[in-house]
Length: 125
Image 1: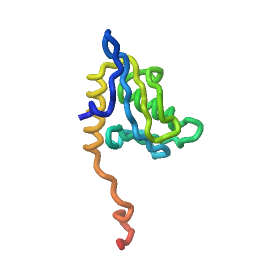
Image 2 (image 1 turned 45 degrees about the vertical axis):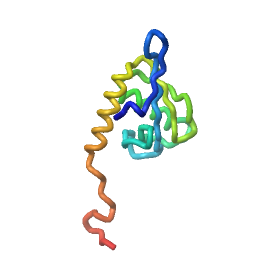
Image 3 (image 1 turned 120 degrees about the vertical axis):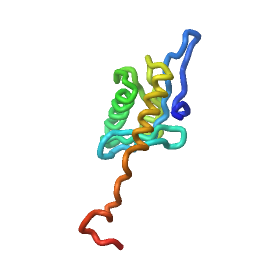
Image 4 (image 1 turned 45 degrees about the horizontal axis):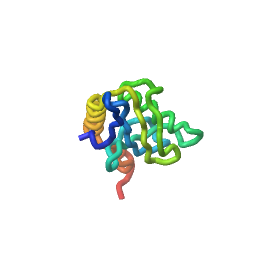
């Protein structure tokens, strides 16, 4: 399920890194995984895309999800774009697959947010 969200960089000795595809929504309320966007992991980050702050939060989010240090994560393409490719070193592909599958399951289990019009005290059109 999650194996199509990343590629594996490897040598004769085995996997070296993974390349994770992201679709990033900056300036959201808080950082989290929101699901899939085609063959990319859809995430939102709280920081605005000013001065690289959204990219830094994106790196922090990926490191947190995969359980690696921030220094193991780098954006290799898309620094000024919503579509990003992120390289993560020092992690086995099976562990990445498990972590992404867990995040996607928890995203699917979250209740949908209500429309503003459904709040008490507001008239419906």
